[in-house]
Length: 257
Image 1: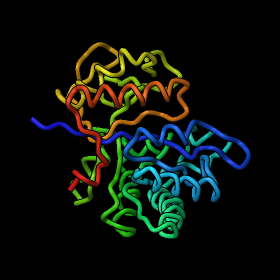
Image 2 (image 1 turned 90 degrees about the vertical axis):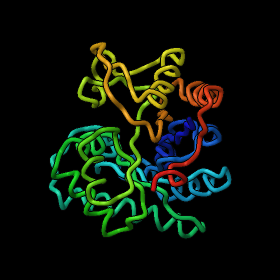
Image 3 (image 1 turned 180 degrees about the horizontal axis):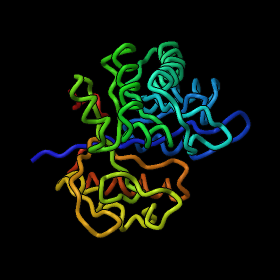
């Protein structure tokens, strides 16, 4: 049986003079990037530079729009409407589309960030707004969302291309959502634990939740966070471990139809 998966990372999350993550190194090991679009992090100079960097490394580019919350890095809760969700996503994704076009490429996917991502995965109104936006913007853009989430199912029903994402360095609740960052079990910090987990996600479609139960999961793309202190170790060893396990790493637009 053939196994393959996309390996992605959230990058370009500095701002002005402030640098976050190890973008220049991380990008060498992934097949796709999620590039901040200026609201939770990132700015025009970083966006342009990172698109160029992705092209140089043969890596696919995705938009990574967040809440308008630069101080909170887009991780704080916000109450927004379906229309606001749609337009917040369109505004940021459209900005990155301009940089992609200016550099002779196009966006592969769109993945929400932080609080926006988590809420849209379970909230029918926000999910509908995001799906509405992709439908009018470009139906070829792949929607990268939490595996098994409400938005994943609804987007597929409406005929969009969906990449179901899993996390190498995050814990799971029994309902398939991510453990809140403030709670015990939110992070998988040891590569010796993370690698067998992701291989099992891909080959068996299972992951052990924080309460010890096994839950179903679909792994089209694996995220390794670029701001994780162990990010370089994680991405290097996960890439090598996946290949040694007979799993091919390739961008989602090569297998999501």
